[in-house]
Image: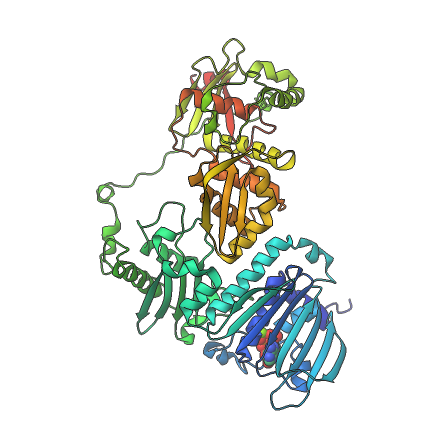
Length: 616
Ligand code: ADP
Ligand code: MG
């Protein structure tokens, strides 16, 4: 048989490499910014169009490239930064793999202009999908400009895979922040669709953080300094009272390189132990300096993960340094960075031996047996409660007619079962057939047996459908605030709020002023307590940032989900009888009562037959 193995042509190899290096416009931003830093630039401009999908351009005043280097820089494994493998452990540059430009040029239209200080004229190069279209001599300032246009023009699948502009821009800005935070001695600017979003002059570290995250940040920062033989730490942690619900402002830089490290993140978490409200995360901006010999950066193509020789020691030093700072600034109640870790075990557990967990198996359970019954999930419940405590269930308007309409559609779907699930003679609202279990579940009697409802998920479903209705169909009523509420956010958070402003207004929010770092709110949706407003908006920003999975980023859907999540009665809340019953009724008036907005089961049923079997 003939030989079948062939070497891949360069442009194919480059495209494959691009898959690893370039996932989205933000990856291009990272690579280009890093190249500019490696070139010794003192000032770097980033220009973005359409969240980077149309254009990512980086202009620097660094050392530029010669005529030949300009051409060579697009070859794979072409780098000026290392000569041999040992150099990998002496790195003081961001790049070293020599594949970024080659990869990018394989999947975009690239225009390079570059000039060295010593030369009078520079070079311009145009490359499209790895093909050099032109190279000519041009007049251009010293330094380099790389423009990357039409990313993934030749890989439609990848292009279609990109998220909405809002999400992609978020990633771009995140990358920009990471690089800008790691290099306060370089000036950065970001222009987005023609307007300036950030202008960061050369400054010290604290000023850089404040310039990025807003003036309010200044008072929140607690300095952390530590100098040991193996690790030098400098930077800031956020005061516990300003901890956010989002994980957004958490930055580790190791030798000026942004890295992700769940392990070191844990060290910070443990230093903050006992100081944070549950569900909030401390912010931190920490620079760690270690001997380059003791780390391996080359374990990940985008170089955001690194391997430390002695992680445990770093963990301990970091934890104690942060604890020390919190203590020194009178934030932590105790200064105990030398304590015996054994003391961390609560005393009451110490004497207790461990016992193997017991698993109880119901051997008679047959998941298929009850199929028809479990299908009877949607219940038509026709009586609307009229109690005045309805304000508890914010945003719900129980105007009979409208809800009635919802019911009829439900009835249609599950006609055969509707009458049977609740016992008609004992409607839930009149009898004492609900019971709250562990402040988490509502148990209710139904004709065939019993119903167990997860109160938090159920209420989320109810609120979600209601908010969505307001957002898509009609304007919701707004409740005027006596005094305008002023909230502070970072500029990028404000940007997100601006994007969602129209939708927020549909739910009943009234913004009287949106400024660079503050917003004034004069109206909120009916039933939303003023104290919840900042929580709702923070949650919303965090959800947008984290692109809540399985949503195709419909702004109104996300908003409805997010608000439902913030406002739903939480697990652990005691519900009065009438509140329990109201929730049950509201749930079954929903279009999709059986799942929460994030697709989790809201209730289960258990028939008398099933119970009977357990008593055999
Ligand atoms: P790496 O950064 O890993 O070396 P790249 O593909 O990113 O690989 O860049 C290849 C080479 O091109 C670099 O080693 C550098 O010599 C040159 N280069 C890239 N960008 C710039 C720039 N902005 N200014 C000067 N030289 C650059
Ligand atoms: Mg590079």
